[in-house]
Image (tube, rainbow, N blue to C red):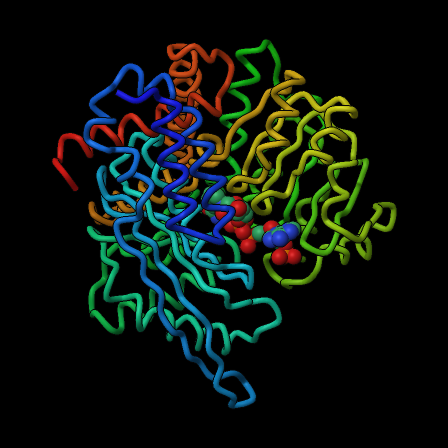
Length: 448
Ligand code: NDP
């Protein structure tokens, strides 16, 4: 039998060879594989049945043309993706991202991560992800609708309430979900829970919009409790000003933290008296403008060009809620030098491996995205449950279930880390706990 390190090395070599030019996918796979050495030692059956080789290969990858007509009557073409990564524990579930940076490698990294995250929620959902290189920024409502209808005209064949259930992600919010769902219903005549993040008037769940951000803070609160700390009086910096960032900021404020900086891809605002979230919501959710407009409402705040600069703001808590690899080693070192005590990942894979090492070496408490941002997809699964039952829970009911789930994920993650000899390392704990359930299900289902 090969040594675990060699098994992992072989799998990684194969992943790089088979998926060239997909650095984000390689990064996500390596992070999980590196955590699995003790698991492989305890479970030789995983090696005998080649589970690792199977788990890194998506079950299905769809790439399609999305033609649409802009407001000037010109035909535009984008590329659409859906990667159905793993259905061992339930129907594929994961969001759609519309952003010019989207390519197959990014969708694969997200789908791979999603598989383990969904496993951690304890709910019966498999992993998938999709999207397009379409840029919704600066487009009219009519152009957005035209694009979404064309996208769904192809995607509808591959999704379904018990098959694959997409949701939002970067660039896909309530407006886009509405257009996508409307087109799905029009083509199939089916009114069922094929999409989550739907509007409340047509089957959406209360508290879904808030869920990823709120869930991050519930997770963080539980972790801080373990170290005799709380959020009260802590200064927080939150990158991004989209869905995750806004509701992370809202819950952080409710729990007594002072949020002093937020950003978008152009720059960041610093308001030492505390960010006024009503203004951010108005600018971002209603007017869809840039964050620098904040200064027009609050002249005492500062605006700085360049989103990376946000990590130079002194804080106790750093919550990256924008995009992948937004905290690199240099930013991590600045955060540490400025005394950061905890980093909570709201975005997917926002810290580079080098940055994570800096945090861990300096005993900064660190919550990996897979565990700490799982509240969004968990609440999406609660939306699916409500749709199937044909009923709607109150905000308080959903929020209470979300909190229970996040507390449970924290406890499970830290417990598994301890059990495998990595006490306090939630990265390892999340990877191992997420992996074990999926691998067990795959084993039980034969060679699939
Ligand atoms: P949104 O589109 O609502 O917001 C994204 C925010 O991040 C915007 O402020 C955007 O700024 C900023 N941003 C995007 N790309 C970059 C970049 N390259 N550099 C700097 N800033 C950037 O997306 P969400 O809030 O939904 O998603 C944010 C992150 O959270 C993503 O990693 C997503 O995968 C993850 N996530 C989301 C979940 C959800 O429920 N929505 C669930 C779990 C994870 P700008 O407007 O200028 O582009």
